[in-house]
Length: 332
Image (cartoon, rainbow, N blue to C red; front, side):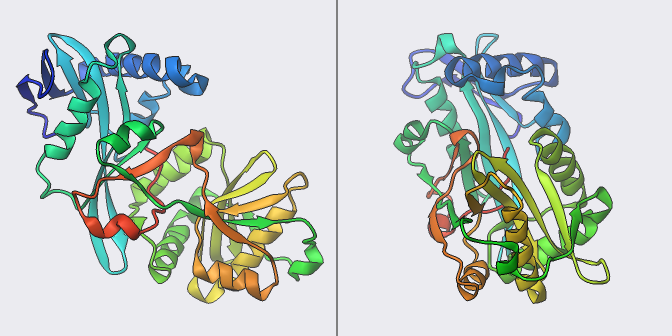
């Protein structure tokens, strides 16, 4: 949507409606609709005041003005939120446009409004994007509209029987601080390009506002930096505990320091006494080779995602991505 909107009879629908960018003066109404729709269906933290408006405050790609609404008269009945990312694969940078926070007010559901909004998104000019995706819980709804799930494999590593002695000398590490972000940013870019992983091109503002202020604070993720003997960063890991799993949500290493950083990852995992498994959220070949060299069992399996969400892409935009695993397309 370019903010101008479109009006008239919605295709396949008996009511007239207008699709417009939601003005800033109606952001509270947008948030109220989302809270009502999501809380009624899934409960949980969606009821917290400010849960959705926090996105607008902390993600530099999530600003008011990228909120799209379907209005019947003056009533907002359905909505989605647009985000944009530049993503890199090998030496090419692509334009990703996606949608999240898709919802219809409970009293207007099952009347075709959500379907009309999805069609309007896909019918918008495609010259601005190489890839379209959606982050959603209702997989059946999106599959009916032609969306397909991305690959979401993870490496599952049983921790039983692994001891500090198994892993050798301790790898130096410390809690990440904000002053580390420039060095971590360089590691992130070098690691993902060397491993040929599709990843977001993160600006300094993105690191500070989204990764540091939002993900670490709101999701309470633990961030560690691995260092060499001179205390220079050589890798990093962002993790959290979920039940009996030590989930390594994101990690990276200088190409020459893979072995050290991977050993450090496993050392962090075995320090969590109640954990039975480590889950590394990307099946990177270099990590699997290192695990094999250490005789540590592992398997690639379908990966969990936060709150049961699934990421979908639409093949009408660019078909080559259908076989690409999706990493670092952050929660939006």
